[in-house]
Length: 496
Image (cartoon, rainbow, N blue to C red; front, side, top):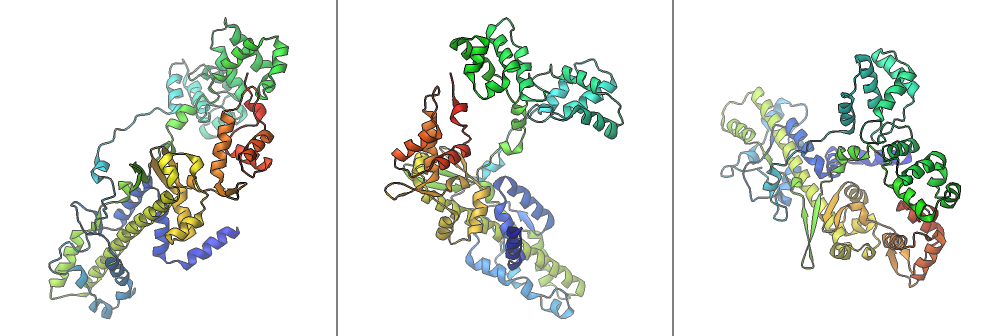
């Protein structure tokens, strides 16, 4: 609640233009085009340019924007104010392209690339896949409606976690369909025969058992695997293999075959479909960093450099007004409206330009700060870096750097990363050197990856190994880093 109050106080100190600029800075590249479309719809004086222009926004033109607009007229539109409308800067002779701003830079990729036709991927969602199989069952209209409700209640990962009694109530209240729990259970059994195997189950145990049922039952390892999940599921999840082995009288090889059968099963039968159809699975990089013979080159995604300009039609209307002798009140009101729209368009173009400058300035500082990583891709070379470090270099506010880091991506030859990936706290070594916690996490991950899986390393052993490498770190810190890396405890990492 305190943070919200502080944020409100901060916003109260900013002008509407500054607030809009902050919001614009947060917009990722993937959504910038939609934001520009909204502005184009609201302001007819703004349009996409059709021809290349060499001029760019400069400090002089920025000051020109700030000095024009509100200071030149009163909101009440008084008669005297209409008489004092100054449109000289809009109708200067010999400068037909005045206010045509082309936001382009040699560092940006070829804008023609954004106009190339991109093939559209046709996908079938997980629920559509199930509904298509429902058509192969001989169901009457009543059963069809109930079955569709069941499929609609299945989660994206393939599980039916909604209580059967709740589905009965849903059908009764929303569709006026009377059914019973027995009928629903019968239809669930039919849906569980659909692909992918394991769908429409209430929990993981049922899901895995259903998949094993579809395997060749003549295989002894399949039978034993089914027995393990049916009768020793808790022991299996906790990796108490000795207890299972003794209870089923299995050899080491026999137990290993059973486990191999189980780990090949899909714990989330609907997961592949859910991931495929989520918009967030597509990451559009905001920046590109290239290694050109040891020299890092930074470019901004061309979608961040839109070709915007002031509408020629609006400028022509101002020229006609300027040439006319008789200027009645209606004409003056119209020209004031046009002038306001042109000023708003100028501000938006300047805001887009400032957004580009802020993005490039921030990313360039991050790239130079973490130069070794961008050259090698080795996480152990990363330096400790916090928001204040970049804010000090760029002379930007920490909140501005935070907005860029939390919503932007950079593509490198080693992969695509969110900018906040490059920020980390520091940790001291025996020599007193400050190193990045990400470096420690990378070494921790490598130690676990190279361990003997029959005898996994405990947190205490990992702590000692890191300390031997010169890192002053406590066992609880190792446990915290391991959890952040989504690595389970040693007992759950054990393999046969």
